[in-house]
Image (cartoon, protein in one colour):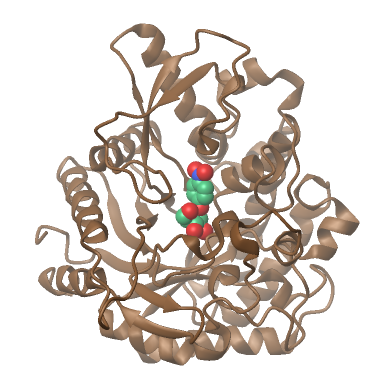
Length: 458
Ligand code: PNW
């Protein structure tokens, strides 16, 4: 583990709705996740983020724990409806004060803030009044909200992430409907994706033109699994490439090349919106680095039955649009999310990105695993999570040795949190949360990670 570059960034990630709680105080407006989690049957065990880790009230304690782990960078998200309760118009001073205090606390602890502007908790008003991510106005509303954040926090925040995982927002929120706003469609995901790209690009434009003097960097955090061809056949190789293009190139090609992958245009026809020339210009080049959230790997075969809907694997996306069949090796270890632990997939994906996009700086903005960790005799032994980190970080190091410009790694997650439709049943954190008492307990993986950070001379 000692071969990581000296300036490698070691961090951990969270998101607002997953840890903050305090869902309806100090002027915060409701988000689509507040609404979605109140619908019976949507979230496992009826859980909601109303209290969660209560980070809103306990952020000082949480920053102290980060310091103890030794992390040098902390990625968190700003809740849009906390800062702008109706999604547009007037900002909420108390929301701004909260994030300002958190940023100050981090800087005082020697921890660099990495701030995500949107991690899925859309102001409910924008959903009701403007159709959320499929409404035509949302790119401008997002850019105006981003402007408020740059204005108030940009003096101290130098690392911005516009959107977290637009793929998940589009596919799970508008395609499969298991995430807020719960819509089911085979066309809306592509409109939601399109508007997210425009929103991202407009926010980046505001940042560069108006806040360039702040001297920060800005990009997007995309998620992608690795897709390995099931066999050496050309059919399966093509299918794996197609799957990666529908997953990651959907968002990255417009940013690096100015347009969607040809295979998506061909297969989706009118369901995929087209960029105007002016929009292509705006989107192209709108990232200073490549943000990647990565967790798992699947095999891909070319589909044998074109009408087959692959509903087994939510994270395959709309597989019928891709003509693919996904599978997993029976020998692969699986996390409690049923995600396979395949460290080499991480290296292959990093190399694929490096190659396709011309050696961009890459930050792994999320990587981690959920296990049934519980507290026994005052400690949480989580050997599985240590093994996962060890495996994936080992492959990251190999990728760097091969020339991939991987610049940083953020563990998902700092603490156990509200895992969306899975509620509190999934425990991803290096810090264990007891949601009854709001007590926090360090897991073994936190100590292991602290050791890696120390060994790398940070
Ligand atoms: C990411 N998929 O979610 C998110 O950024 C986090 O908020 C979340 O807690 C974490 O990963 C673990 O789930 C994903 O279906 C949700 O491929 C679904 C998928 C990928 C990432």
